[in-house]
Length: 256
Image (cartoon, one colour):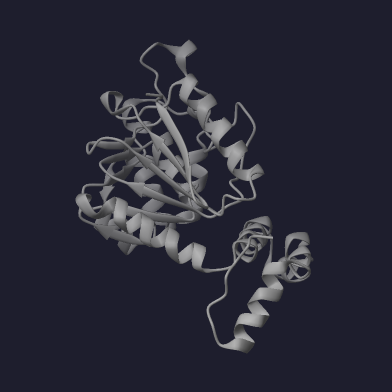
């Protein structure tokens, strides 16, 4: 089986790291498979949501595989997230739920932070070990941590290399839910069901708007017109939402 499994069931794409013997460290081959998966997910209108998971209870992902030396480093080793800054910096346009267990460190931590919802097993540990082992580069994970965690907690992880457990990550708002490991897959599926109960096109437009002005002042964001939102106004789903409200029933989304 491939070290990255990519399947589509209904309107949900499943991306699963499948290299548990290496704690799902990302090889260059896996990096290419991930890029192919994100490209298909973004291009396929039938895909409404994504789950990102990993095989093996011990680790979600420990980052880039550097066991073969410098020439074995994946693009992810340079930072960037879904494909790494050495390749195209990809943003997943569809809402993504990450299901995390065990070690989620370094580039693996960054990969998880690219998701919109994080569900963590109570076995999960999050950390940035780079400085502790004397390694530091253009770490995208550092920049994401500074934006997704309180300042002093992010600096604690960055400067000491220490890890925080799932319950602590939940306390700081890094993860949305913590569950026993044997309930992780079901919890992720429940979040995907919540996402797909909403209009898929509205969700995608909302995500694009939220991320599109994330680093800008509020005044700029409020003054910005977002094409995906304007385009949504003419969709069948927009009309279906209005019909369903008038008929007092649940809408049936078509994704168009």
